[in-house]
Every structure is written in structure tokens, then in C-alpha cells.
Image (cartoon, rainbow, N blue to C red; front, top):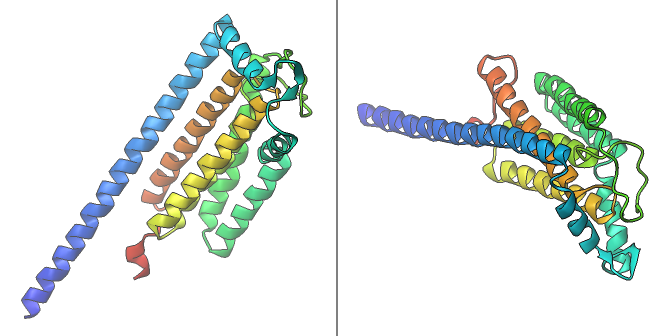
Length: 251
């Protein structure tokens, strides 16, 4: 009987170990794909934008979101325009800093001190990269339509789009490492993706960015988030950051 119980325990452990390895390999492959695809996409977009090959489609998409009789009027009722301003605010520096501080507070209260330190470096680092890229390309803002929001920096890549991707996707990627339930991990990632998409689309709707600016911001931000996940995973395996929490640890 003892031998049978021991064999069952070994069997359950082997199954759980294989499940963990399978999830790890799948997650790693996805992150590597996002990182490489994002970098490739950003470089390709930057090359096309620099040569002016995207200007025609940029203008067509931007004008499609305006009333043909009055280019100062975005399509849709007034409440849609107001929602656009609300969504674009989710990518503002003040909101992103507040959300980052909230996530850091959670990690500190949960006693994930090293993860909190990593987060405090990863998010500001991505935002700094966004600023450097904007200064390097120095693309003018759209001048086809009136701007529905205040702007004071260059256009490529979209700072709001990239900073929201950097912040929301990076925080989601890091917070999933300390969440035990798969449904919580999925919820955090889906929420981060939705917020990032809403911010980027609102920038085009308000006429303050070309569509390719937003695409480039998404690509760069997603690449940064994937890189942060890979680095944190590597540090966790080395014991430099608190290891991932899973349901087996909470049973």
C-alpha cells in the first residue's frame, strides 16, 4: 500500500512538472515571437515612414475618421469624441505613473520586493526609450485635420501608444508571474491589451497621430514588454527575483 501511494505521488508530481514545463516553453515561445515580430515590425514601419511610402494610406485613414463636410468634426456623436479624450488620457504620463505606483504598492505589500524593484526599472526604462525614439525620428504631427487634444512632441512613434503598451503590457507580464490562478493571468493580459488598443486608436481618432505612428508605438511597446518578461523569467530561475506563483504552491 505504501509503495502504491508513493508511486501515485510520483506520478502526480511528474504530470505537474510536465505541465509546468509545457506552459513555460509555450509562454517563452510566444514572448520570443512577440519580441522579434515587434522589433521587425517597428524597423519595417520606420523604414517605410522615413521614405514617405505610408503617407497616402495615413492620410486616407485619418480623413476617413472625419466628417467630409467639416474636417474639424470627428465622425460620430459628441459623446464618442468625449470618450476618445477619456481613452487617450489613459496613455498620459500622469495616469501611467499613478498606475505604476499602484502596481508597485501591490508588489511591496505582497512582499515581492525584488519584483517591485525590477518593475520600477522596467517601466521607466520603456518610457525613456519612447522619448528617445521620438526625438530621433522627429516626424511632424498630422496637419490635415485640427487636433482634438494638446500635443507638444514629435509624432513617430506615438508616445501615448508606446508608453501605454510599455506600462500596461509590462505590468501585466510581470504581475502574471506572481498570480497563482490561470484565469487571473489571462484577465491581466487581456485587460492590458484592451487598454493599449483603446489608447492607440483614440490618438488617430483625435487627429494627433498618423496611423503608422500608433502601429510603431504598439510594436515597440509590445517588444519591450516581452523582453521584460523574458529577463524577469531568467532572473527568477537564477533566484534573483521571486519565483513564479502557481496553483500548486497554494494547495
